[in-house]
Image (tube, rainbow, N blue to C red; front, top):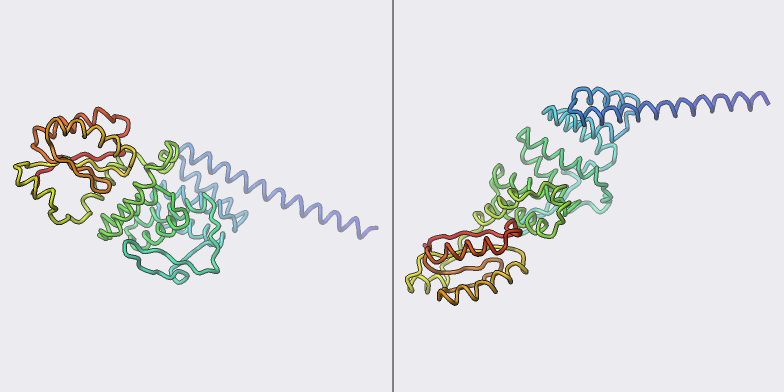
Length: 309
């Protein structure tokens, strides 16, 4: 009887200690979150470090501590925290576990079959922010690897595709990979809801920039028959309407059928591009008519008048 009572008391004390520890960790995590919301990042780091002292295997404490360091522009400790969080989760995928295989347009990561891809939203965000921190430290190659894993795990991550495209474009100077990433970003952005665009920061300016850069990165085609005919007819300019939205393209073509018929202009459709050949004074009003006709869908449309070279 006495042994039973003693055992019960020890167990009660142990359970009380565990409950107390959980409460302390939860209290520090909540305090850290509140500090981040108020912009008190150094205070947040202190709270998260205390939570880690209480429970050293808490991946959330490491991840959110990494966020606080990131906001303070302390990128080295931020990466260290993100790495610790991923290690605790068992999801630290480092190069020796990856078999890189080059595709025609982009490097795809072929993952060891023993690794299970069961990432939760928070965990994918850790990979993304880790890549952004590496960019700030100018470790562009490692940043690209982290972001490539991110988009392979969650192919719908618009912000990751955009950052990766700009990384390949501006820093790594890989035109093919940059064009591929811009294309993936634009394809997803057209299908995304308004809330998804807001969440992944797919702003109109970012979409317009992606359209512009993708076009600039696309190799110039050889002169086609239509261009040669336009030159022969004395037509010096062309209006380019570029959109991946098939419905919008169809509506623009219907409008152009009427307008170009009146002016006697040549029109050609090439995949996502509508080309109208004519003189500049004819094409400018036509461009303005398209802008006025589709004011709410301009983020899906790229218009340009250029001289036929």
